[in-house]
Length: 214
Ligand code: SAH
Image (cartoon, rainbow, N blue to C red; front, side, top):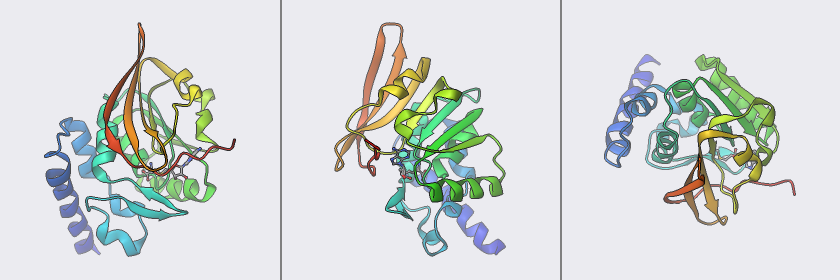
């Protein structure tokens, strides 16, 4: 067992050195978070041997845990310093929430599948996180009661930026969201500035769709 943990630890360090640093992830706090969070705990045991590989993995209910690099790219774009309140839409496995919890003060995460939310909450509590709050509902509405947020991260693709999320973004806040059709999206960084909203394209990506109730 200990030997197994040691093997995962080596794979995790290699993931950072081979997948994140060469592609330009520079924020040391982000890199350290990826060195710590046990990604293998967020996938089924049959998939644990692949947990640190350079691709997404299925987590059930047709959902996926994103490729490590994409999680890192989105996280780095939020420029977290440790004091922030962050909203995540699409809890999924809980892996991205764990990374955010390492880097921000509080993480609010919304998931429409009850089973995924409960499973993620179980794992995150088992690992020891106490600054992550879970909600089962349609993330298109955000989580207005707890806002505004200095960072918002949407981990499912959508044709348009939901207005509720823009309303819950604090001044100087940063929102990262994959915008496009169900096949391909552009990862957008939206910042709220005095002059208005500024959008920066971080590159192409492919996420499972953000499913709306309407
Ligand atoms: N962040 C996750 C990956 C999420 S995959 C991780 O680290 O593992 C996208 C997730 O968004 C899925 O779990 C899906 O169920 C969820 N989702 C899709 N549409 C949603 C919606 N409208 N509201 C909340 N969650 C949604």
